[in-house]
Length: 348
Ligand SMILES: Nc1nc2c(ncn2[C@@H]2O[C@H](COP(=O)(O)OP(=O)(O)OP(=O)(O)O)[C@@H](O)[C@H]2O)c(=O)[nH]1
Ligand SMILES: [Mg+2]
Ligand SMILES: [Zn+2]
Figure 1: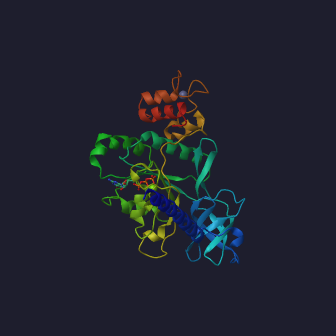
Figure 2: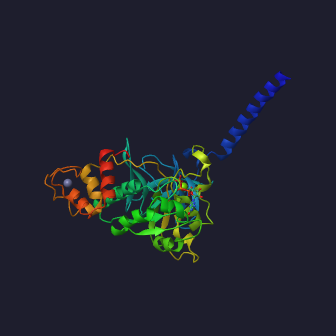
Figure 3: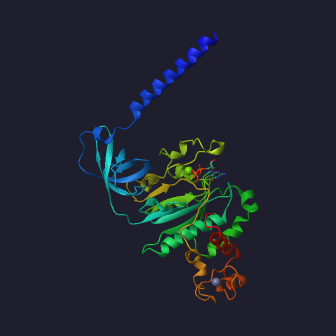
């Protein structure tokens, strides 16, 4: 009996192995040389990147195709405009990338700045009372974007999106309203939304039409839920349950682009897109020295240069104009504290 069980186990493994192979053969995309006859060149938009392949939308008919990436293309990310050719089997190959109007980058510990998405003009920084509202992380995002904006001609617009505004007791417990006052005084637009109640969704739509935006923020704040609310008819990657995520949460593993026109009732009436991006747990700013960090806190700018020492770090130096501004409440204490945290611990 035991022996028969053992055999059966082995047979089962063999059957499962053969089945896996068969499925792989059926679903595995063909290698480039197997693509056969290719169509003429087509203009495409990168929806998502998956390793050596990407989903490309044909800009003529808005159909999406899984395509190989020809080598030496450089980085290819959601929002990139590309030239591609189609094969007979609905697969294709990306042959070239158009130059980018803008690129949104994320610092990484070992590789410097890495492109996350391209051709955007607006960033929604999404925060929420759950898992927790982190002004420190919000400031890290703001500093990174302000720093990039300080170096380019067309600055990215920034909007703070406060999701889960239905969780009133968490909002009160964490004094979120009080903390938001700081950002309101700094002229950062704030939109409060809830995908549970629909609060703020119309206002969000108004800010999204005609724009090329990305949603960024901590994992679990509800970026993909917002996308699902805006694009109920689309199949979002939110439906993929990550093996790694704790609590079996749906976590986004690759950026995905959604056309804004899908969000409105009138076909082809508006342009623009919104990109959902994977959440982060920490946000290192290794690439920025203290001068850049200070310049990323926009309310520091009028005081920079007025310190007694030219190389002032604005931490505890005598005659520091920033510290004086904190004393006189021209700079919010919490913002200066977050500045000190970033300078002393860039890795987060
Ligand atoms: N109470 C409440 N919960 C929400 C709201 N929006 C989303 N959630 C919940 O928040 C959890 C995380 O949502 P996701 O949309 O997966 O978050 P995400 O930001 O895409 O997370 P990552 O993909 O890991 O970055 C889910 O359990 C949602 O149901 C909201 O407005 N209110
Ligand atoms: Mg997500
Ligand atoms: Zn100073």
